[in-house]
Length: 117
Image 1: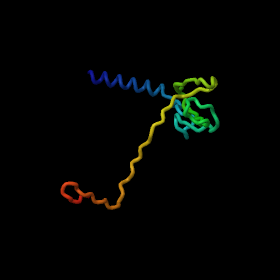
Image 2: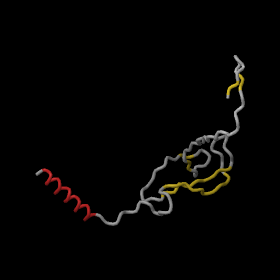
Image 3: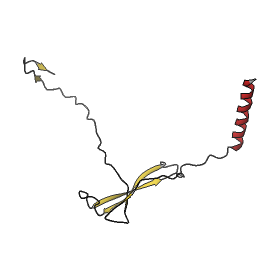
Image 4: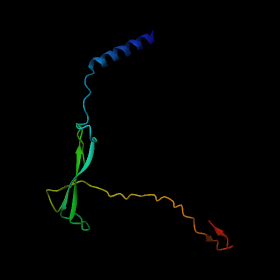
């Protein structure tokens, strides 16, 4: 009896779900591009924000290609009240160098004078 009740419930939910289904809403505005991406706006002169910065900078644009809003933490500057900055962090990139096929140099053992490879 329980199995019959579960089957009836699942059937009813399936029918309700099919009746409500319509065209799937679009999440992406332009399907040829990622949902969120960064593009170069321009490169040009700018006042340095910190003492060790150059007087040229690049402006990046964060593009929201979705119907869902995004939120980004920003901050103002003391040099230009019209300028809005996005805090950033420069992260170094490590690259592994492939091992050479050249033969290894022999090292002499300091105690016994044996060669090691």
